[in-house]
Amino acid sequence: MPIEAASETDRAIGVIPAAPWRVKGLSILPDYRLAVTFQDGTSGVADLSAVTSAHDRGIYEPLKDPSYFKQARLQMGVVTWPNGADLDPAWMYEELTQFKTWSVPF
Image (cartoon, rainbow, N blue to C red; front, side):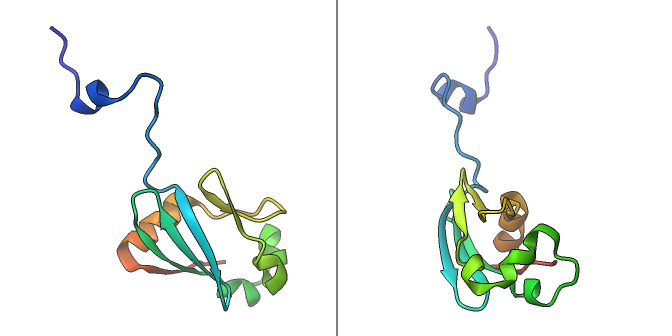
C-alpha cells in the first residue's frame, strides 16, 4: 500500500493552492509606500522612497513620478506597473514577515 502525504490526499485533483507569498491586497500610501496583504494574511508596508534618490534606476525610473507610482496594480499576485516593472512577491513576503516594514533597495 503506497504511503501518501496528507496534503496530497486532501488536495482536489487539478487544484493547486495559492502560494502564501502571492499578494492579494494592495493600497498605495503617501511617500512612495505600498501596504500589501498576502494570501496567508501576512501584511506590511513596502517603502519604495529610495527610488527618488537612487542612481541608474533602469525600469524603475518612471516610479519616481508620484502619479506614475500610483499606477501600481496587482497582476497574478505580483505588484506591477504599466511599463513592466514589478516587485518580487517572495522577497517582499520574506522581508515583511520578519520586519513588517521593508525599505526596498534600488
